[in-house]
Image (cartoon, helix red, strand yellow):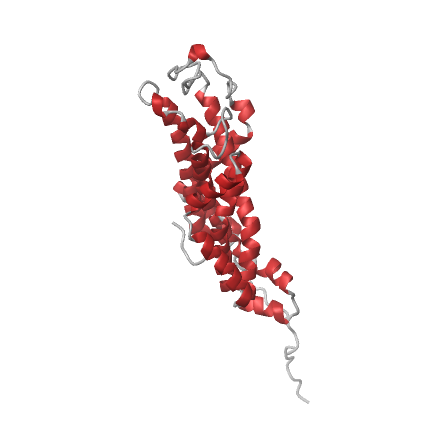
Length: 311
């Protein structure tokens, strides 16, 4: 018999030495909606970054006012009355000799306090009402919408002045008046976001899987509406700052001799000629604070809004 040549084993799966190796998978790039990507986009927005820095300076000045103020903001010094800006008093003094820099720092503290607390109050009231109106609809939506329309019939500052006049002049009552005046805007934003989100697939899947109303609202709708609410907060803070200054200017907010930017502006009219710094520096502080939060809000809107683009 003739010997047959050896044949290779067809079951041999050994890879030859010359076979090319499988290519490595590239590292996953950050998704466009991730926090790192959004922070990077925010850093590229110079106006928003400038606003964030100035806003942070105001917040730190408010927190550290006792450490930063060189003088007692309510302590008069009649020998230094109407002193112009100098090394002793960087922003000059008022008609009672009180240091303007110290009063601006403490005035910014009152403005930040009202701005932040009023927005928190507006969110505590407006977010639950907006969620209920947008999610349940029908009678809940009708009742909340009628309340919102009634409050929106009055301009923000007019409503704040009216509430402060009813509650009485004080910093606490000014905070309550401004917070309540901002509730309609928060309700409208929350309701609109809830109406948009409740028809999405993942919300329907959560309901089909047995999720209750509280679970769906707390775990699926509210977290995804956070971006719009953050933007609304940055818009509400400068409005609250202006509202506090107006109420204090009219005598319905902070009461003298406690410092407030509005109180400082209220008594400057007789001294605009001989001591213009009494009005200039408190006014600049109000403009800087409101502009900073507005710039920050515009930047956050560009970054957080998934339907818009970044600058």
